Amino acid sequence: MNIPEFPIPFVKMSGTGNDFILIDHRQPLIEPESMSAFAAAVCRRKFSVGADGLILIENSEQADFRWRFFNADGSVAEMCGNGARCAARFAFMQGIAPAKMRFETLAGIIEAEVSGDEVAVKMTEPRDLRLHQTISVNNAPLIMHSLNTGVPHAVVFVDNIEETDVCGLGRAIRYHEAFQPAGTNVNFVQKRGEAFKVRTYERGVEDETLACGTGSAASAIIAALLGQAASPVEIITSGNDRLMILFDLSKVKAGGTGPIVYNVFLKGPARIIYEGELRNEALL
Ligand SMILES: N[C@@H](CCC[C@H](N)C(=O)O)C(=O)O
Image 1 (cartoon, rainbow, N blue to C red):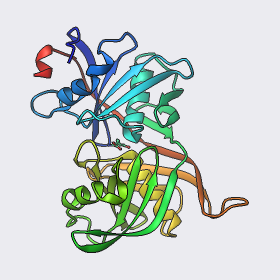
Image 2: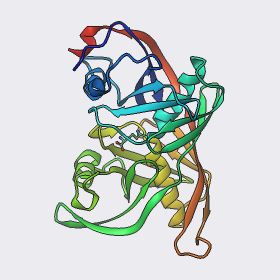
Image 3: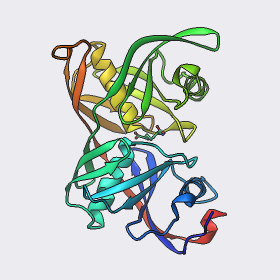
């Protein structure tokens, strides 16, 4: 890795327990070929700052800014719902963007609105919907659904979410041949009154995270398509925080087949935990 010039100012943020390191990278500090290794080093818990992901905010010619998003293992993700809410608040706070903004991600343009510590983002149009797939996991048939809400998600409805082996089952599904080569994030979902509890095994973190925005959106939309919910859907995260998912749904596409879902919004808190300066020892 090319060693960047230290110290590097950063902000640590949490989107309902999904935590990120944010860096204003409009003046480039880290060489593109070193970014993945840099992300993996600074996201390493207990040895460095520790986080589920790294977000670099850069200049854009089409929007208020663009981001580069890295998972904790250094892999690049096309989109991250909670990261998007944190990035919007960071950009507003640093004077990079107004309260109502647009920014570029690999999944497309994201619209966001910041109001205090609450941030709403308009997600990309969901795609690649598959309902009622049966795959074999640990030699047993498992029924699941899948949807791409910016990144790929599998959704499994369970009867006892507390007892579900999120890491064991999640890893088996994440690496299942049905989802290769990209792999998938995996959400386990259980209805709780009018709300839904969601626990997510995240690709690129390779662990359960305390919340997942795109996973919550995929779970809410699939619950609605199965007739179990209607927008707005309240999601209870693993960390017992709340996210709201709003969307429009029409059961049949005009002149075609299959449902369409559009105007998908993800709303919830995006909190600033601390600000600091990275030293070179953060990479050791
Ligand atoms: N935590 C995220 C999703 C981040 C990307 C994911 N790990 C992937 O690689 O697909 C969210 O809040 O949406």
